[in-house]
Image (cartoon, rainbow, N blue to C red; front, side):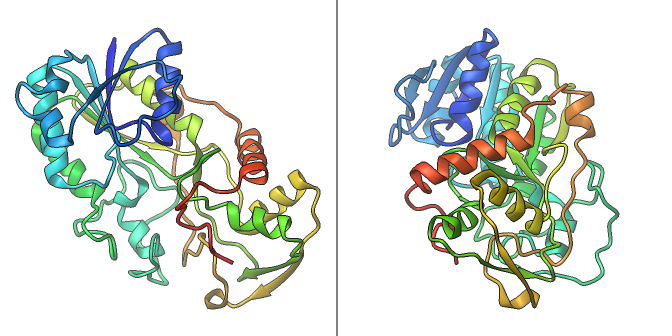
Length: 318
């Protein structure tokens, strides 16, 4: 198949491009050209702004894609979803959109993101599966970025479209660097570790390689029509468990201290645990790799050697 990535030169894209090429697919990366990505990326590049690439008769349509993968670089919206869906319809292509677990109403109640919208009595059972309630309003503090609205546009378009809903993506080169504050403490020799509420909060994560494998599997065998799929690791750690695992990897002994929830500053602050079902990912798409323990170790050792990417969101957290 010819798989055209819209965006795809930064974090998730290069991983998925390499996996798609290894699987024997022809890969095209359509992007602005502001960031070319790795020099050895096995793909043909076409350049242009998003609207021009997706316009009727535009470069993306002329590339005759079998599959369009919309990485939603720069944020999701109803308008972006509708434009990508229209291009896919004209091309006769399957559309795969990289959405997020933040489409679920539960994530608002748990305080994912900036912490607003928290409730102490969440309304949905865990794990959250793809039939769980979606939010109907923009996520609090999202500043216009709205995966739920983007997905609504795909459903309304009546095309074959897959919405992949990753948890918190981690891996070497992570643009958010959620694990970096713990690695940095080790590098700086700081043994004291504040654990809000004993560090029991749980925030379901996913290795970047698993996201890449999900993209390729969805291109090959996702069901027709609109179909959503959570993309998460099969197991994960609480915040305290994550700290312990990072300590094990780096040969470090923490001095943990339980503190109030409001006292700590770190990127895993949730009022309620966020646990997502990965049944569709395993049973329909057949994605079972990589092992999270090995993927976390690769991430931690990358941070240990290089530190976070410039501009990483959580790089300066204590």
